[in-house]
Length: 164
Image (cartoon, rainbow, N blue to C red; front, top):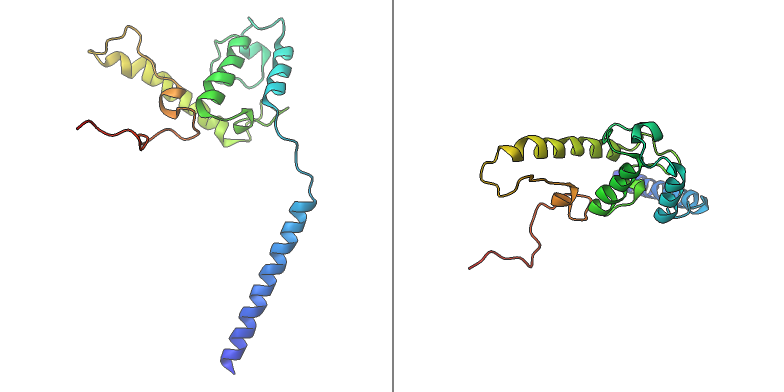
């Protein structure tokens, strides 16, 4: 008798879970999917927005600029386009909400800011202290570690083997 009650209870739990899953799927299916993000169109719109002000400081053209404050608006946009999107293999939506570019709602935006601070420390402090580097101005950038991927490369590709 006790086993029968447990089986009945287990069956009821499974049925309730299935109904919840079906209901959630129906809500997802009935919701309109957002149109895919058009990176080229967004960048074209931003270029129109800064037209005639490309050489002005980014802090005077864009809102909520916390990094690259000395960059011009044109250079700032190029840093976002190439320094971040290409280097990390992402589009603008990785850090931004289209149309609300100054929003800080996405944690990835703050991560990018903090990684920029780290990169500046490596370039301006740490690399300069290595006496035997054969470069007058050694630098790292996002691509140095990310190699076009969201997460920094922590391993060599499997095709690369040590000599020997």
